[in-house]
Length: 240
Image (cartoon, rainbow, N blue to C red; front, top):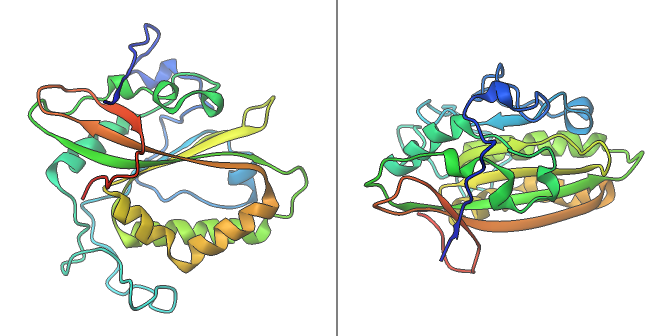
């Protein structure tokens, strides 16, 4: 059974009520994030990125970066393969934001406004979520990691199946941060994570982070309800 997400009396769908460093309501969520030393170590605010799912992907993909035995999971028309329920989630996630400044140390189900995101009552589906909790090493030389992160993110978008990417702001006291991705399926996430730039970024992270912890969840929507539920990943396939 999924966790029934609690209703928080202080929650608001109005982003003006959320501290500016937790979310920037002026930022276009369809713009690819910038990965460099400033944006990754001292971000001005959190980044919500929703890939433009109805836009054509590049006509030519960088073949030298992508193994020929694992081509990107896109259609012949170059349009990302998106099902109707995932499209509903994509639309709802435009209102996604944290509800506590201490989201990096909070349980995933309680850190964001999941209970305020509504989908059509007759829709049903589940999605795969990956959570990254991290703390950077003081003075670490992360130049190569910034470049690898940027290329790994581009790989994920080109691969297909990425519905949302969210990157937070390090806690001013503890230094802990949280980033999260939502995928159409676990298979999409595995395909993206097997790409060369992602593998390189993971290897570089070992020397740049004091803490780097991964969590995995199932995000679900069932018929007859409008809200979402979250449960820890149990090893079964998620999504399609």
